[in-house]
Length: 320
Image: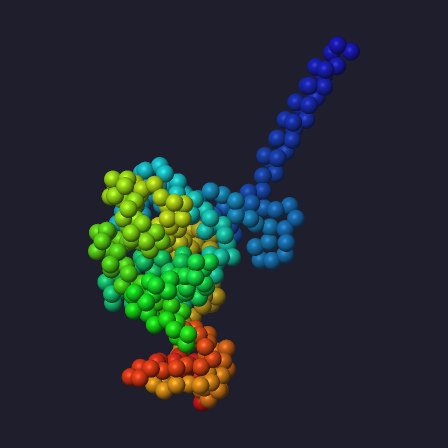
């Protein structure tokens, strides 16, 4: 009996060794069937049905060797800078549903936003700021920031937007982009670089300015900030990297699945409209479509001030 414990230990060792050899012999790691540049996949034992059934993304990502924002270099050699980018890349890569729809909507809206940024002398990379702010949808935040650019009422008025009970141009992707450009120009003038201008869009110029003064540094990447602002520029960088190189991060989206810019015509209105439902029907559309293309209309009627003209978007193929 004194040899029994030794026998059981030897038996357990043999069983474990056998299991390891079996597991290695049956390794089910495979590559994507369609693209060698995609992430690796891991096969499931009980896969669901579908073209890519049984495959699950489960690998870490390799960071880009170099990265810039608005022509300004990101110092990835600083360990915490690399780790902060690493975090945001993984979050947005593996949050599949959110990122897929972001890429789809980007195809519709980025060309329009790019044009306005260029006209205002704002670097093209700021188009990704609206991607992380509003996700190309007209949401309202818990702090009542509105629209693609998540603009507060006070900031909207300060930067030239009309905000009344009838009209709120924060909901207009074009007008709100123009307002954001005004803010960013002022922020760049204050801080002297675009990275800080971007961070101030989240923290505010006054708040970011105090942080620079108190901590006696001159780079966003050297600041100790609250969690949201600390992550802010890195979220922009991650979305930039993924949208510009979707296949590298496992997003194979057929071009037919991307959302296209819809063709519109415009009706100029310089008089009150007492019933927008009736107006929509007169244009050959319903009220839902009117609001879809003109989300800045915030009431069921429109009061027009003297010498004011509004341009109301209507689907091009609609017949009055």
